Length: 229
Figure 1 (cartoon, rainbow, N blue to C red):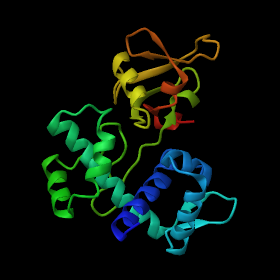
Figure 2: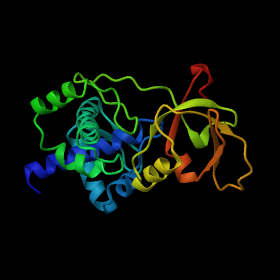
Figure 3: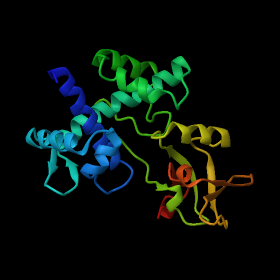
């Protein structure tokens, strides 16, 4: 693996480690990291050792992986690139939000900082990408809304959709078909689905039962912030 390939691999690892804890507190384990990257556990173990030696992660054998300050700084810079590019592809080139991830994976390593800043300005300095994930500012700062995953919210919880995970393009297509979108106001409904899903009621609409994979991909911010569990 040459220097460029190694650098790209490091960035990819750091991005996945960062994104795992972005909306929940539990750090990622080596086995989870291997699944997310689609790599053999032995390959991940070797790379994590290299990341630790470079001061980018903290890791002890048989324990979870955490970014150091240096690792988080580099991860946030890559996340900014990825999400700005996704937003650019959707807004300017009419890509579907289920199509942009793989394109952004390639482009994020090719664009110069100057071009990235120009894209940011052209888009009006967006604060979030098409899926609701926060786009860090050029200085690395960001503000993430307090939110709860839909399938973990109690019946009667009222909120707005602030994030729809892009991990599974099929889930994004289902969300589209259901007519759900960022900023939609919904209420978690009490339904007897036999464990087949979670009910939500859009404001002024009927209850829709979401399959577990879909309900687990949506995050809600309470209209009353004090109501977030």
